[in-house]
Length: 390
Ligand SMILES: *Cc1c(COP(=O)(O)O)cnc(C)c1O
Image (spheres, rainbow, N blue to C red):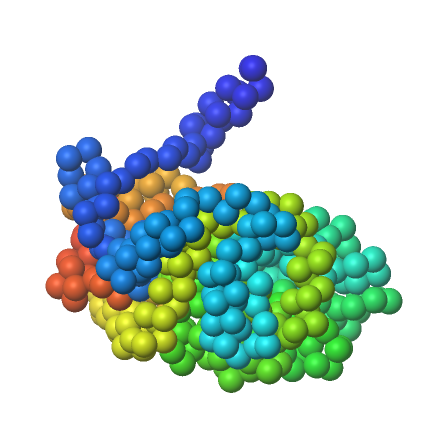
């Protein structure tokens, strides 16, 4: 159809066209494409657990024991024995009474938010929240007030000035996926208490990444008992697939009976759950893995700063190099590609217009010498492209 090709042509004109590219895994931090080897700086597999021998072995054993597919939804026949093990462990890890596994983090957000927000409720949402939170808010069909990113004055004003006959819900990413900053959770929780609002934190990029032992954002701030709803994913630092929500037993009982993305989809395969379980055990048994991730992130941030590249202060492994226009972000990614480094150019609609960037994702398995080289190549590329160092 003409409108489809017009749409695609327009994207191409604006350097916003996207394609899937397949990469062959070499090891946890290297991939191959078109005969060329790359250092991988674009993966959310922060602890490299998707390639861990114990995690792989657990998945293989689960296939042998249980087969490849779940064969049914969670509420019919899909709940194989590994689920309760994983859900118990997740609840414990997050310091909550109970947890429920969804098929993806996306489905957890969409299902939980639309289940919790009813008529007369108002959701207060950070403007940089993940698309799955935005879609959850849309599905909830309630009033949504979007506050400026991490702007507590704005949130306070909206809480004060928005009439609400039902519940107030504040929802935020724990670690913001494209900026790598951490939500100001202490202030959010304080305000939520004042307005008796429920707080939902999406820890997709925080689980296994920040807080003591990688327990996430609430644990990082010591607020595990003040955040009612902790969402997370099994597909990033845990190297598997799936999402989850953790909270009180009554919350989980409610969500299990209400969240449509939980109810109406076939359960995850046994291998996936076994992998997540083994990965979680690895995180708990090897806290130094999380520390190493933090050290690597710190190393890259500090060295970029030393070289005059402005990066936001922070501790997370997500480090954006701001480029501005989409074309510049793509050029930057191409320059690194030339140098055998794979980092993704992030463009609208993933980030707001004018904030296109190269998004570095550091992992625990990167060698310091490799990271040093990455910094050098970035500095060189920025210079060559004449991208202003702001
Ligand atoms: C990746 C991500 C999700 C979605 O998780 P998946 O398991 O990949 O579906 C949700 N929220 C945030 C903040 C994310 O970055």
